[in-house]
Length: 121
Picture 1 (cartoon, rainbow, N blue to C red):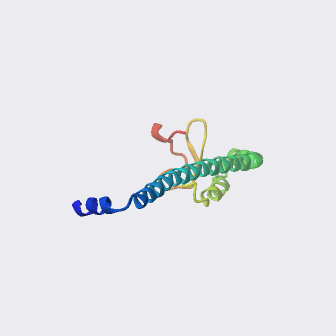
Picture 2: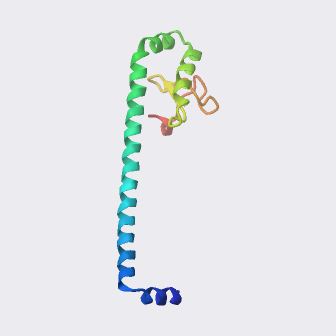
Picture 3: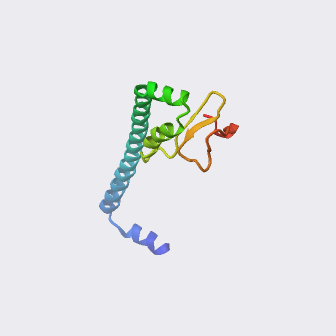
């Protein structure tokens, strides 16, 4: 550690100034990159949310008839199309009493089971 400090002291003022300018630019650039990535993630999540909402709205009649007919297989296939997206891990449909009508994770959420309080949306 002492050798590094001695080496830094032995550098010329121009070298120290160039190093300082480089470090300032590196710090500001990394902050800007982090903010840009965060903004991009938020925008992507909003776009995906809007796409899901529009998909559900456009398939409202299909979903309503599948729910009324207890066609759990059709509901499952519809949900499976959502979980093919890498940002959506699991998807499910529950009724007003939080009874599972269909879910992509069938090991955890079997049809007809009630979601506990921790899993309610």
